[in-house]
Length: 471
Image (cartoon, rainbow, N blue to C red; front, top):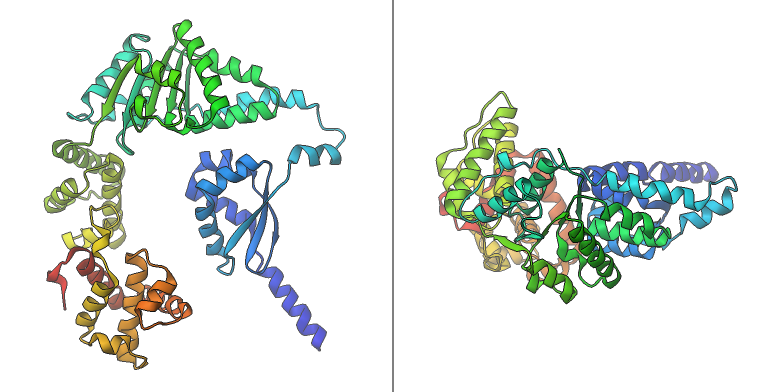
C-alpha cells in the first residue's frame, strides 16, 4: 500500500514538471521573435529542482547578456507556469564540442561558418514597412531630423555620416526605417541595431570567420546602425567598426547612425569614432511640443479606427489630458492611445477621465515619492470607515481583515517597498502574511466586481488625490 502511494506521488510530480516548450513559446510571444531567435533560442533546459531550474547556454557572453537584460522577464514567465520556482541557474555547455563527440558525420566546421553569417544577418536586415516617411508626424521638435533623413534618400553621401540623436521613443528608429525603405528599392541596404552588430562580430570571431563578416558589412551601399551607444566599452568591436566606417566612406556609401545622446557625450567610445560622427551632419529630435502631441493622438486614433469596423472616439477631455501629461516620449503617447482603445473594446464603453487615469497610471508624470504607506493606510481607513489603530491591531474580525488586506495589496503595487518592509509598517507582520493578503485581494478582484471597482477608486485617490470618487 505504501509503495502505491509513493508511485502516485512520483507520477504526480512528473505531471507537474515544468514544460520548457511552453516557456519557450511564451518567451517568443512576450519578448519578440528577434530577441528569441538571437538569444533565448540558445537556452537548453537541463533539470528542474524543488525551487529552481538549471539551464545551459553555449558561452559566458550569452549567459551574461541574457542575465543582464532578460532574466527577470524569463523568471516571471517560468513562475506563471510553476509558482514554486523562484530562481534560474546557468551552466555553460559548448554545443559544438558535444555534438562533434556524439556525431562523427557532422560536416567540417568551415562549411557551417559560410552559411551562418549570411542567414543570420539577413533575418535582422528587414526594414519595417509600417515605419515610413508618409506616416512620420512632424513638428518643430523633429522637423530638422525629418528633412535631413529625406534629403539623404535623394542624394546619398551629401551628409555623411548622418547622426540622429534623441531620447527613448522619439522616432529615431522610425526615421532609420523610413530611409531604408526608400533606398532599398535601388540600393543595397544594411539596417542593423548596434547590439546585433556586436553579436555577429563576436559570433564571427568564435567561428574564426571574420573575412565573411568584413565582406558582408563593407559591400553595402547604405549602412544604418541603430542605438550606437550600445558599442560602449567594446574595444575590439569598435576597432572593427572604425575600419568598416572608413571603408564605406571611401567607396561613397552612406552611413546613418542613431543614438540617445550627441557624439561628444558617448561614454567609452573611441575618440576617433566620435570625431568621425561629429564630422557629418548631427541632428537631434527634441521632446514633442503640445501641438505635435495632439496631432499624434489624432492620427493614431484615425489609424486604429480604420482597422476595426466599430469606430471609437476618445473624448476630447481625455485627449487633452493625455497630450498634457505624457510629454517625454512619442512611444508612450501611442501606447496610451492603444491602452484606452483596448479598454473601450474590452468593456464596451468609453472610459471617463478617472478610469483613464487608472489605466495609464504608470505612464503619467506622477511623483512616486508622494505615495507613502502612511497615505495608503489613511485613505483605506477613511474609505472603509475604520480607525488606523483598528487596521494595525491583531484583531481578525472580517470588517477589519478586508481593509487591512486591501491596504497591504495597494502598498505592494503602488510602492517599491519589499515584503519585509511592508510587514514592518503593518505592525511587524510576517512576509508570508503580506503575500497571503496580496493573493487574496487579487482573487477577489477577479470574482467580485464591486471589490475591483473599490480597488480602482482607491488607487485613483492615492495616485491623483481625486476626491470625487471617495465614498
